[in-house]
Image (cartoon, rainbow, N blue to C red; front, side, top):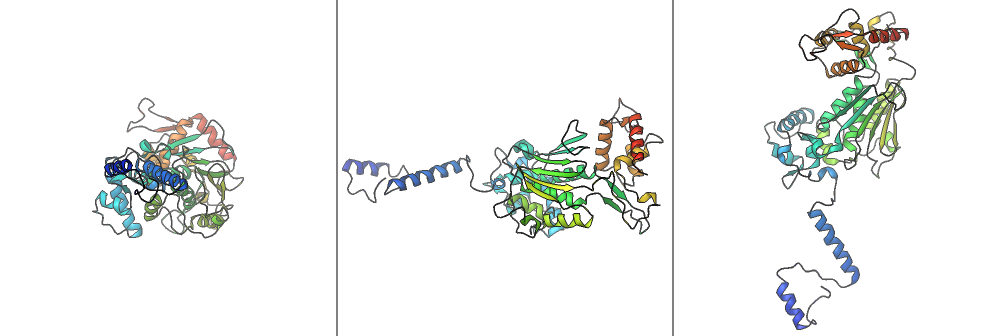
Length: 403
């Protein structure tokens, strides 16, 4: 309604205003500019109320069509235990799911937020399709088919990070030392595990979840690339990433639980720690670039099939030679077929690891190994036998001066 009062209006207009006054929301304006501003404000309010637009972080918005029944109570209980152990989280282990979600601000009018679904959802990708992580391993230095190993991982953000890190660690070179210094056998990976984990958790935590793209983890012969559909916040630059900087999480409600379980730190030290650790093991500094998304590149040691052995281990000790888990499995099977549990035991594992399962799947797909009982792949009597292709591969690796 134009004007500050209605005294100068026609009597019939005053009567109309009085009659509808209790039925409509009325606002006054003095000029056309005020009218336009008021209309825009009312439109934004309407769109927000109907969840057609959002004014805030994506992870804080309610997860569309999701209910509390779509969250996994066991995952929340596991988080509580981990957070209490890792950071002294104040809620007791017997806290209810509702209390946990409320404490972490993961509810919007009793509905789970997008962050709640990504953290504790039974099937997060049912609601947030692109939240999966794609992992690929290439033998060369470029993306090329056929892809030797390709996995698409689904689950919560904790699952995604763990599975993607395991994928990379199962593919890179491994150095196994001797028991000379103690009962435990020292193990060193070509790229430190914490560097791989930092790159992947950053991609999962800080990506743009409104994008249709997924996080991609690509391992090449000379480097590891981790790409995510996202960008740096305005307050950060690529140069600032190389030095101590403030923590500016793209998804703050997602970042808090990851911090509480020690997946990330709050102080913005992650990228600096990656650079420091790479220097310590003789790797080039990681590179950070923005190219249709954010890319972290971690370089492998150039011109080698395996990692160089530490100076503290003399060359005469064959046990100190580095070799990948794939090569170790091939060596074990040169004499006779073995079961998965027998292979695991020979590798010094207490139980069959996720790494070993992945390696055997890859070797089977490459026809480097075959089942001894091909018609019963899940038989408890199943063993694995080296093929002729596997023996040829082992011979080639020996020509590369592997022990």
